Image (cartoon, rainbow, N blue to C red; front, side):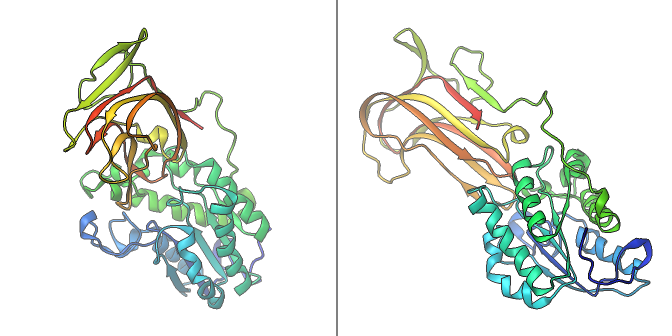
Length: 375
């Protein structure tokens, strides 16, 4: 049962709230950014201030409180990760909110563990609870359409159990493709903005929060993974049957009776590579294992540490942040080397490209079968 802060109820069975705190990322509020084609200062990608979930929920509260609007503090600055909000813990505590909404987790992908995700989330909720032991605290599930993120949601649920907060399940909100801004044709052009919930999605957020306030006991519980949902996997065996759409025609040769791809760079200037986009909806929010065998011959020294033989997965998230994780591979001549490399994919992924090749080095490199599997 939620520790309601006041005994008196407004219309619709919801307590009267005087001070409301929102702790979130860009879904809660994002200032103007020309490079994203975003000019508002509200929840990205609402079409207007009053259309984001914060203002929609405040409107519901005000109506239920017979026109009396609650005081409100929105904290979305400082960055989109949980650890970015730790600098504001004293502020959360001092505000003494009687209703708090925590909407976080979409940008936390580097360390999705108890230490890297759950513990900083606990610090945020603990500060709110310490500021007002009787506060109503709602913690939103993660926006990661179409299937959500069960690992992160599970940790958020654990935090809710520990601090008597209420988990707001967004499974159905994630599942409806019409909730993404991309479904509202022509409104925004940047894929990062279009990844966010649009007007319909923002309304779905507000409705889910409102339903939880009205009837916490009826909040839905996420079920188990469907039996027909197979783990993500892709494989390139260089036999013409692969599912990768490479930017160039691979130069396939045979070595020891096996088909492998060969890439040769005659000079140490520029790069030669194969690039293939990964399916975003299938791999985002997951930890992937990329495995292959690599052989090199006369690969020159790297001008910079990130140059050389490339086995890289270049990603871009909805905030425009680019990351280039790659497997460490040697120079010179080396025999077949087994490579097994793990990489975490962000929930708010808008682009992911696998890259094989040579960069700013001369020499020849061969890649055996390339497999990508979900860990």
